[in-house]
Image 1: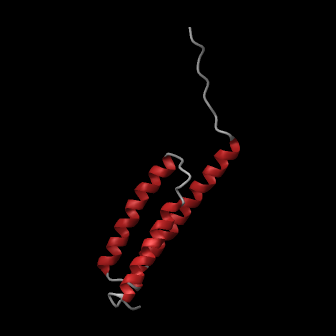
Image 2 (image 1 turned 120 degrees about the vertical axis):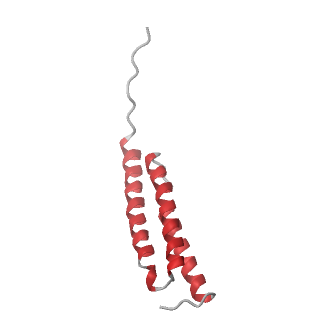
Image 3 (image 1 turned 135 degrees about the horizontal axis):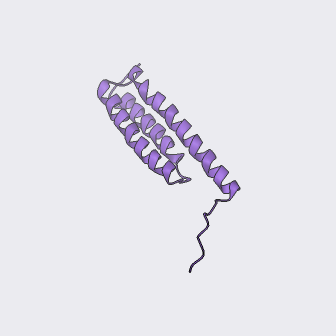
Length: 99
């Protein structure tokens, strides 16, 4: 008869760092969502809808990263902010958006 398996516990240092990164990622993503939501001051409705769809897609990606405890999770909101900046710059320079 095999001995019962014992549950494994993660090391506290790595676990704390991972948890801190995940909390940071969620906080940054909420801040990026605020940035997307106030984009109506600069962009037309269609661009805000594109940004909102991208933010919601990033929510799904972030949720999967958090559930899997991936350390790259803070890169998700940084990508959202980078996409926001690129779209706003493109709109200003090429499409003539003004505040």
